[in-house]
Image (cartoon, rainbow, N blue to C red):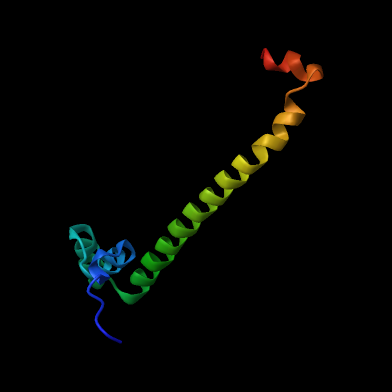
Length: 87
């Protein structure tokens, strides 16, 4: 594959380049993980997976809430329930 002179100008490639150069926090975390016993390192990996999944779940819940808001607005905004709006 020939060298693409515009490779560095493509923003999607910047992420790949950034991931090759760990920042200070990444270096600190890697160093700490390297000093853990293998079973503790496995716990760290499980915790990272948990945090990632929790964030994904929150984003999904937020998206679902946003999508259902218009439907619920029709149900909630009616004269029969107007008294509850005052609470």
